[in-house]
Image 1 (cartoon, rainbow, N blue to C red):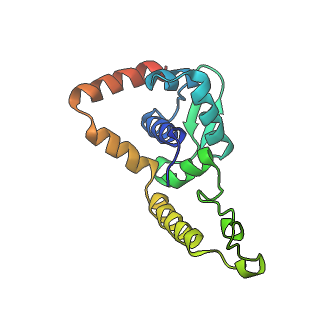
Image 2 (image 1 turned 180 degrees about the horizontal axis):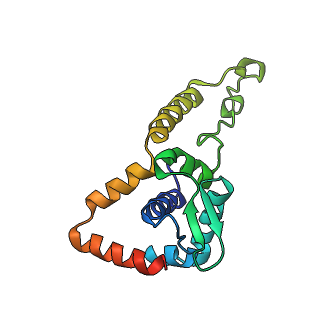
Image 3 (image 1 turned 60 degrees about the vertical axis):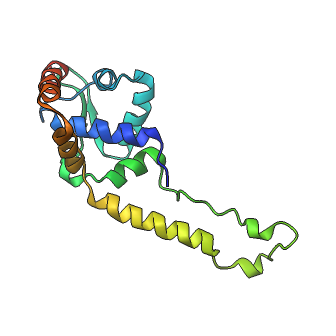
Length: 162
């Protein structure tokens, strides 16, 4: 299964918000600048995350986006579902009912083996992503950064959260 890049941005944004001071939000503009994204593009994904109840927004000097729950309680699957939707990645169109050897609709009561295989794979992936949290993703990102990157990140966070 392939997720769109919006899922990647959504996870990264949530990981950034996990590191933000709890009493301050980060603006959509700051989050877009951090990733060098057009603000309108990222805003679409931020709105999807907020609609799903993963982010909250507030106005004012300490306003911006915040995680709606602790980072350890938000799974990567929830982020993916908020961005991509809850429908299955594989959608069977019953092509076995077409062509010179078409099966009847009555013969296609059960999903074909191909659809069943994709459903099983998606279910397995979902179970894995439900166990990985934004806190886990934030720790992985931090552990991959060198000391220069971490210093730059801390400096950016101070500027962005004021």
